[in-house]
Image 1 (cartoon, rainbow, N blue to C red):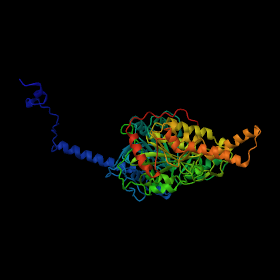
Image 2 (image 1 turned 30 degrees about the horizontal axis):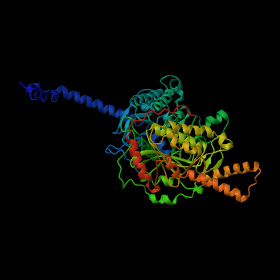
Image 3 (image 1 turned 135 degrees about the horizontal axis):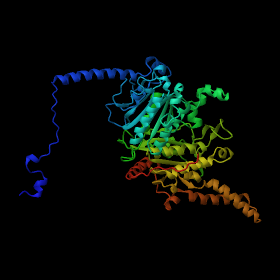
Amino acid sequence: MLGWQAFVSGRLSEEWKLESSLVSKLDTKAVRFGANRAALQVLMAALRVSEDEIRLGGGAKAAEAQKAKGRLTVRERLALLLDPMDSGDPKTQVSESRPGAPGAVQLPNFLELGLWAAYGMYEEYGGAPAAGVVTGLGRVSGRLCMIVANDATVKAGAFFPMTAKKVLRAQTIALENRIPTLYLVDSAGVFLPLQEDVFPDTDDFGRVFRNNAVMSSLGVPQITAIMGMCVAGGAYLPVMTDTVLMTEGSGLFLAGPSLVQAAIGQKTDAEELGGAAMHAEISGTVDFKEPNDHLCLARLRSLVGKIGSPTKAPFSVVGYDAAKDAPKFAAEDLYGLIDPDPAKAASNVYDMREVIARIVDRSEFDEYKVDFGRTVLCGYARIGGRAVGIVANQKMHQSQTVAVGPQAGEKRTEFGGVIYTESAQKAARFIMDCNQSLVPLIFLHDVNGFMVGKDAEWSGIIRAGAKMVSAVSTSVVPKITVIVGGSFGAGHYAMCGKAYDPRFLFAWPTARYAVMSGASAANTLAEVRAKQMERGGKVLTDAEKKALYDEIKSSYDAQADPRYGAARLWIDSIIDPVKTREVLMTALEAASLNPEVAKFNPGVLQT
């Protein structure tokens, strides 16, 4: 009798062998087979002709009108956005010189959905091929994305009833499968002759914005590129997504110049009312302003490439070559950047981008809201192949157009190292975006604190500061802090000080870590102490006042010294500035070993 081991190892009769291979009995030489094949090939050829016609959108004349505005057609945009068919490398980047595909109306690397939407409908208005919007699944920088792209050659990209339903279907698929979603917006808004069938119901236009909010709440990344007009109710879509890009020459407004004049009598041109420059610098609505479609799509690819994935190792990392991916500038240059004299801690003036350029891969930095809130720098980069978001104090003085408060509309000079209202708002939103996209955060400190005074208070500095501190507090991605120079007062908190759970906190020898700088504290405390003595009947000479000042300053400087903080384990390590990149690479690798990231729940934010 055979034993159990022989039984389970399959060494028994061949008649018990599992057979799972299918056998085809189809007669491919049969007359009926040949007739069916020929008929279906004819049907498919006819369908392909119709599909090619649909993909032409509004036709050649409308396409030429689009190009006359300096814009690409929707399928040319997709050809630049999607990964090439022959590229398995998620680092593939688009350059401005990469050609589009004006003659190739079908994109082989794109699973198009809803192509036949609105077929045979709206003929009384000239038709709406594909409902004036292209939707489908494609890979962007190695990530499978849902893409929703307006076709401006079809009635200027206006929303017909079926346009709304097609967009909603794409959002539903993205929502059910948690697919990052990219919107390429170029739309005149609702098609007004059919507004009653577009505007009011559950499955109409407004549901798109509701879905934006729900997708965001569930952690589905959404990025919008405004590449033409974005008006009326449609203006809400991009702003309800996580990140907004906008090309120069595009427009984003609730009402265009003509309607504004009719409604309130105000005369303004489109650029002043809602152009890319205005939204980048004054309203702060746009996160990335780009010169043209090509560079906008290149930026979009770069941003998508840094999105993490909750179902895999959560944080984006790509292949890294120590030689090819090294910064373009020598780390040793950092030695000459900051005056190490403690008295200069609050007054050093330099461009923090010089630090960033020497610690990030290839010195490449996708800077966020570059023209808004300029005393804080935010942006995406890679360090050792790992995606990071960087929040850094800018120490150069900045010229800024004031958005709100008694100086609204005027230019003012903002002091480097000070967090203003716009800077805090910008940083808070960026930190939230990094949590939404699972991008670890690096904080580079050289901060004097928040701005004070009437203008600051009127602009809501406390509210904006609370928003930034709240975003840092509830952040769930790894946070790593490097104190480069001063780290004073509430600015230390907002920039992820020790109380805000950074995974690591490092400091350069030039770091100063206190409620305020030694000089500021000494001025204040010496004045208070002198007045106390004078009330007691003692009048201090100038020499005694100076001695008192020096005594207080010396004590304060000693406490602000990074060695004082390191002795008390407030600082994990005092690092050589030249080793900053190396240290961050190790810290990021350590942080990535814990793949568990809690759900991001920012709570109630001051708005």
